[in-house]
Image (cartoon, rainbow, N blue to C red; front, side, top):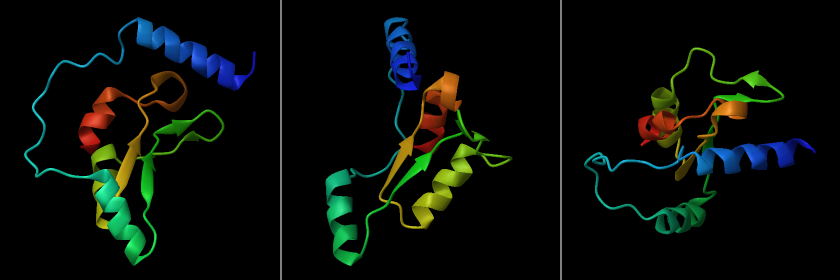
Length: 104
């Protein structure tokens, strides 16, 4: 079994255990956003960047250092990212659903 097979099996186990079931929470008050529209606009101006928030990597270890997800999300948005990819996988990438909330 290779890395991808192990990651996939672990993900299936987490899904079956209910890890990704989220109770309804009130979203921050913001106007409606369109991801597709943001990409089209940014592509017309140059490049549309989707920034990744990944706390750790199985091969590189810790990637955050002393930075916080909220801080990086703000910096990425200020830098022009049209979207954020937030890893929520806890075992191999130290992600969490709380990171997703923090980046919103």
